[in-house]
Length: 443
Image (cartoon, rainbow, N blue to C red; front, side, top):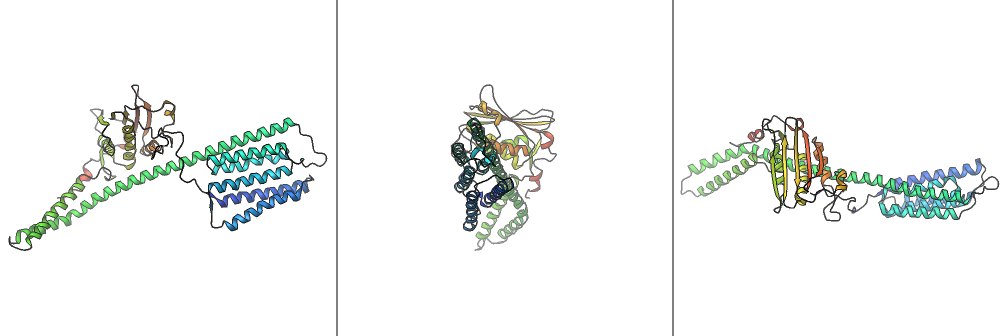
């Protein structure tokens, strides 16, 4: 059974999200303001003798770079991933030079070296984040070994090597942990956003198809009366024209084509296309499930539909909604793709619940992924073309919109088993399945 394409990783994106230049420049302006204020206050207010001119010169380089970015990249409101990584890499280097001038890791502000890595983890993909983290660890290591003395009012205190080693260890661990955690959270948010967008696209496509079918049925109904008039006139022309009239052949052609149009419109009204039926049509749950399965067939796999409803309970009538149609079709398609020879779809109803069970004789779900089914970008066919790992996520999202609950499991004899359950009150209607079609009939 296709577990909705289960993989621990999504396929790489063609183009990563572009990063806002304005936001990165604003973050740097905030850093510049904080650096200048700190240098001035520590030097003049607290009396710690800093190498003020070299330090302000380092800050001035950031000011100049920001101004250049604003002037020369005015048209580029967003940066590519590589440019953003270099942008943040410069911030790491600039901060490292400032810390070198002001005591290295012994400076309490050394913790700020985590900031560029954290910012990068929220906007960049994994490889640039790893590169930034490695660069940050290299800067931390160099500052632990080489730096100017910590500014002090008198003789600077002697920091034991064990304390410096502890600071180095803490910063390295913090860089790895905070960077990794921030990236994983941001990546999960991006994946969920992309998956939701794909779900909305699938639903919109299904709704458009349904709307086309409804429009076709409505057109058949509206065109019935004028076509009937044309048909009557054509019959009268054929009846009144003599057999040797040069127009009789044209009248017969007009009559035959009118009859043909009438048959086509009547067929549209009586049997709307499976994918384009009116979203307001009600039909038995068994017919809805079979219509969903009919959208995908594989000649090598036998698809069996069965009903086990209570004899004393009338079969529920269900609105033919795009969410249910597309969700069931996705799950049946997945089952057929992974089955060896047979897929069974069992529909059961009673007075309170409606259940659809889809089982196959394939390899089943990987046991270690059963608890994660329904997450986006999970696929056993990682790397295969057109398999993004969104099948079950889209199906579950759409079906849950209709009030369904999904359960995934493996059969004891082998094969995957998916159970979709609704409360009957959420699906049942008193309308008859032929009510809408009867209104569209052509006389």
